[in-house]
Amino acid sequence: MNEMMSTGIELMVIGMGIVFLFLAMLVVVIDGMFALITRYLPQPTPELVKQTYQDNNPQLIAAISSAVHHYREKHRKL
Image (cartoon, rainbow, N blue to C red; front, side, top):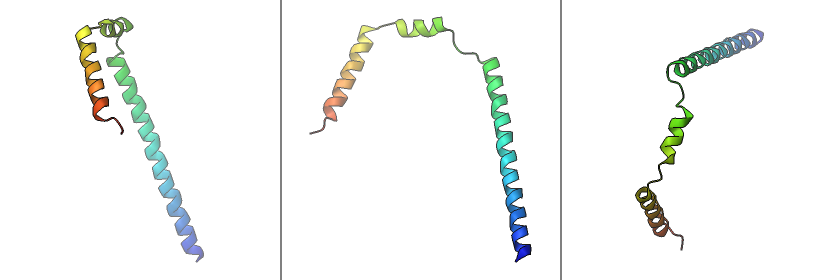
C-alpha cells in the first residue's frame, strides 16, 4: 500500500510539473509573438482612425436606419 501511494504521488508531481512547464512555455511563446506583432505591425495612427469615422454619409446612415427599423419590426415581441 505504501509503495502504491509513493508511486501515485510521484506520478502526480511529474504530471503537474509537465503541465506547469507547458504553460510557462506557452506564456513565453505568446509574449514573443506579441513582441513581434507590435514591432512589425504597429497600431494605426489616430488621424487615420478619426478620418475613417468622420465621413458621415447620409445615404449610408439612412440604409442602416432602415435596416434596423425593418429588423425591429420583424422581430417585435407580441
